[in-house]
Image (cartoon, rainbow, N blue to C red; front, top):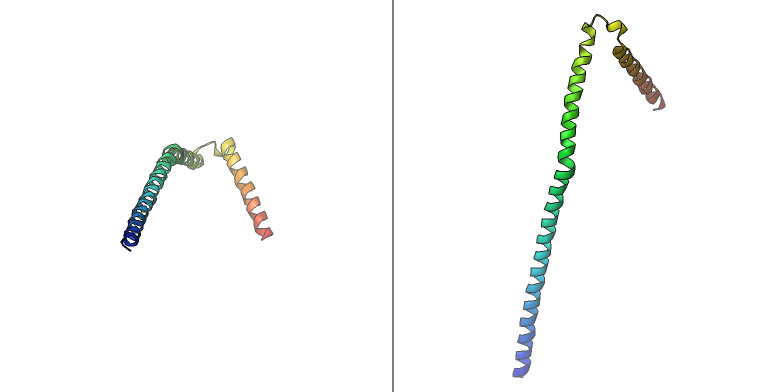
Length: 106
């Protein structure tokens, strides 16, 4: 009977040790996954988001500069004969026609 009690206690101790090791392995895996996720986010930011944001800021500056130049056309003495102004009007007319066409489909 003593050997049975010792055997049961040994099994319980072994089981507790195995459970503790399993919990430790799960915690290590979660820690590694979190570390990998941080690494992926950092790499994404460095290689994709940051260059894209720089490009967007550059495009915004260019658009602002272009908008300022376009707004000055009306003050130009050659505005009626301006090829840029003429092209802008054509584009505006085409966009208006496309909008009207899309509205009639609805």
